[in-house]
Image (cartoon, rainbow, N blue to C red; front, side, top):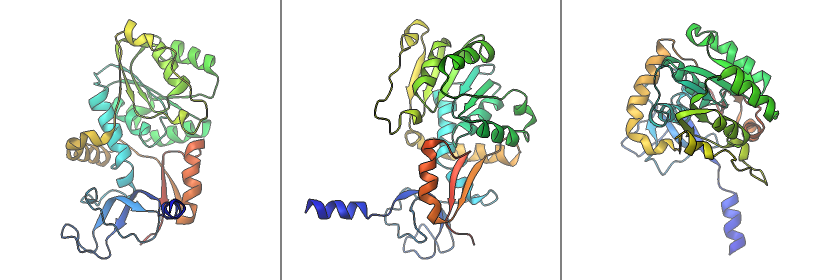
Length: 289
């Protein structure tokens, strides 16, 4: 029985956040032809029984793919993390890691729009170059949103990070990677600084996860460090959509996607996330109308 059960589990369709068009429904909340966003299967057609978390797309003058990125869970995570967890003030010194990612790229732009001094880091020269190329559309961001290419050179990172980019220390660190990056940021926090813990991608799938050595900073500098999940703040979702759609239509923000065509390329795209191959929000386009 155990063997049979495991086989059934392994043969289930993988789920992920997606955008889909309704082709048939018995649910009165949705009509044929509606576009919805929520958990869908990695397949061309899905039968969705649990519809509680599906949302009908009402905004049609933005790319459909943005509803799983800019206007989806990553965008909402950036919005909640910045405005609710970081408690930003104009003039704050703000640092965001994985600044070319689905969450980080929006966080950096929100911080700049809020009047912060913003520095972001990305994991490769390609990511830095791609982000800066897109950011050229934003004159007010281009001149102050700096991206430092960092590899595993921890002490070199500390030198650049502490001396060149934040000589007066960091007020807010939005952490997407954990590990050595978080440790280094903690060393340079200012008094009453805030650290938003969004992700720990550097510690995923490692046999020997690394701990943090500089937690004493939280005491000495009275720093607040808090983890969060966007689903705890769903009451803010309507406000989030209104704000981000407005920013986008005004040309105040841009959003980078890494688009793969075809369901057959889904597994490779997913695996690439953990080696940093993607630049921006990873998207797999299953079908086009």
